[in-house]
Image (cartoon, helix red, strand yellow):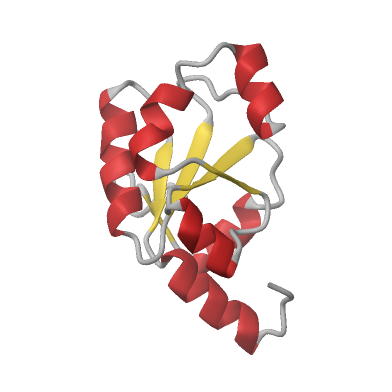
Length: 126
């Protein structure tokens, strides 16, 4: 996930997402709307915070965050992966988090569309 060359890439591929899903220290946030989650489900291992609420949720206390999402609240160094349907909304939230000092905020640009497509091809249960 370090990208290539001198410039760090903050965009993840499907393969990098699969690796990240195995790491308990990575927080994956699906930023789609609730109705979208209801229709499709969310990425395995992810939590759901709609796009407009991410910054507010990160202002919760550690205990409040853990109680609501059953995951530890990320700190500014935690690797955070953002996902939506096709990478646009998650890119916006990624930029917002980077401005707030979360230096390891990544965008899974393929989003739910790519994940669902590849999961079906590989017979991964959705």
